Length: 93
Length: 265
Image 1 (cartoon, chains in turn brown, cyan):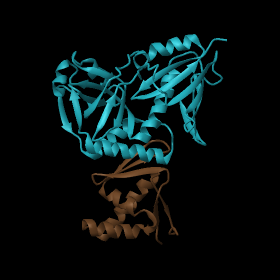
Image 2 (cartoon, helix red, strand yellow; image 1 turned 180 degrees about the vertical axis):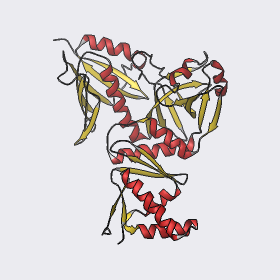
Image 3 (cartoon, chains in turn purple, red; image 1 turned 30 degrees about the horizontal axis):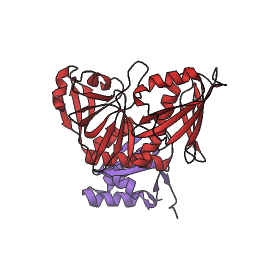
Image 4 (cartoon, chains in turn orange, purple; image 1 turned 90 degrees about the vertical axis):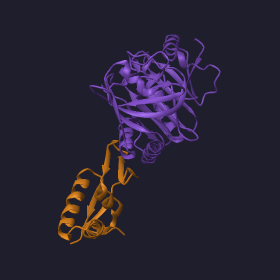
């Protein structure tokens, strides 16, 4: 089953020097994503699956597909726990 | 009934008129904002103030700010204020103290600056040789200490809240009257910003350049903003990114004596 990732609402994000800086309008908390986190954030349109994001990471960083999927899944879980993204088993329309 | 009077306070060339008939409050405001009074300035905003003997609210209540239909509603234990931004008018009900207006002015300037490409920053700032140096960091980082050590040729703009605004090709720092209960206000001067320093204590004086992502992080941890509005937050983040792209920033470790000022010659 595919899992799709979507960016949270009430967030402002800007790319600064290759890192994504994200600010929550709700509680002013600040997150800075590294390059892999930034790839996930930029792909999190609700229509791209975790598998597709992992494939993109594979191409970009020349890592094996299994570890890429594990890393991306863990990263998405951490971002979801922080409220920056959410996941859904259905693609957004 | 005594006649109302305006106390007009100007910070960063933006004047706010405070109108009340309460003489003791007028005296308190004129004293607290004495270096920033601008009786002949055309006010950008006006607040009518009613002094109440005691608050209807929990006196210990923390500041809350919300935006409803274009009106900003600001509440704390000692005041309740509503501000219609489009009408440029507001009303304050407060107990007799100078701190309510101090807090409300910070909120007003925060919004005005966010629209004009600027921000209020938890930072001290000072001018030397026509250039402003801004020192930021959390409580205890040394913001007041470093400007307290400044030699006589330095003008202190503030030891607590810096006022920074975009101009043609950089940022200008303006003096502010915003100070803690025990510290003194800054001077109503201004100068182009030469550099931002993120403070920390050290055995000796050394500074290292921050990259733009580190600078944005430092700024966002120390910028004052109040309303949970996504557009406003986006604008503040844009301004922080812009500031980081045109003002050099450094991590500064300093030993608390006057020698640190040789860095800012």
